[in-house]
View 1 (spheres, rainbow, N blue to C red):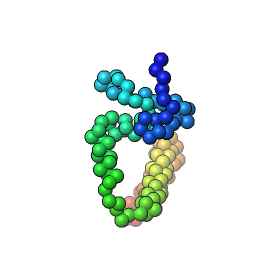
View 2 (view 1 turned 60 degrees about the vertical axis):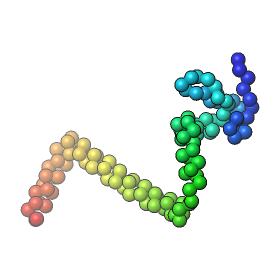
View 3 (view 1 turned 90 degrees about the horizontal axis):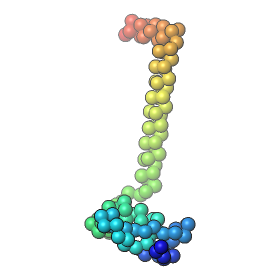
View 4 (view 1 turned 90 degrees about the vertical axis):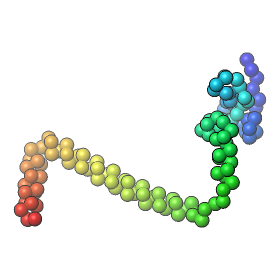
Length: 121
């Protein structure tokens, strides 16, 4: 059994469990070192290669935009509300289609309403 260190080889941190992940080269199977979960996931999500990490470093070095994060959040909340309204309307439409298919009186009322609307047009 291999003895693992108590701190991450990358950041010096630890996992809540106290155990570290064995970071390994997927092509060869050899262990590179011991990483906390965050470092292991981050490196893995960046492709397990230096080029992915270099792209991330270059991104972090870019100048900031003039957009405030709070403004972005306000936009997302509006978007969420719109998406939520659309979702509710779609659910209502599905409910009406089911009722139309199973309830003859409802179906007749819908047809009558449709006929009246066409004649008024």
